[in-house]
Length: 280
Image (cartoon, rainbow, N blue to C red):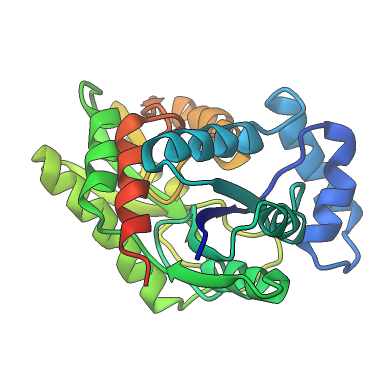
């Protein structure tokens, strides 16, 4: 049996002109309001008009392929290369078994579960083995810790919010944060959720803004936002943290910094290699 690896990511537009079509994919073809379209377009404009997510996913796949010595493919749920497009490449390469890893360390049916369904629907005879979660992989914890070393301030770990309750996701996201804090011996840290959706409803909290308000009330003047639910730069890092939260913090007398994203971290590559080896 010829084995390969499939990395799965959300997908993001690489040109600002692609934002409307991208949002259509995200919404499953449902109409996108003018307000949401304008807001999302402005966010991409603020970070230069595109997202580096595809670039960094390709970098991560190529690095993992060098380490493992077997083919590593990547597919996106909401943008090119779509999972179904990647599966065509897999079959053309003669690969008939894939170790599949979603580039989201913590499990949720709303995120990882959707990637699994999309890949299964496109598999076409390719056998899929899954790593459904790697939130506590020691080398992942080490990779996040490496990025945080040397930064000053109260650490605020974050993950992408999801509609409540999402109990497993909440438990795993907090566990990742706790493990990184323990690895570094941190005593002054908190956990919050970022990037709540625009559709209303009850989302996992607390919000980053509420934590920054509390820091300001306690005269905390330096905060490090450390996203442990993301493994590379994209709009939720480059806009939500670098633009939105930084501005919010400055207005409250707080200097906000963040560690470099994992991106091309060799330790993260080693973490992915371990995750692949543990696929069933």
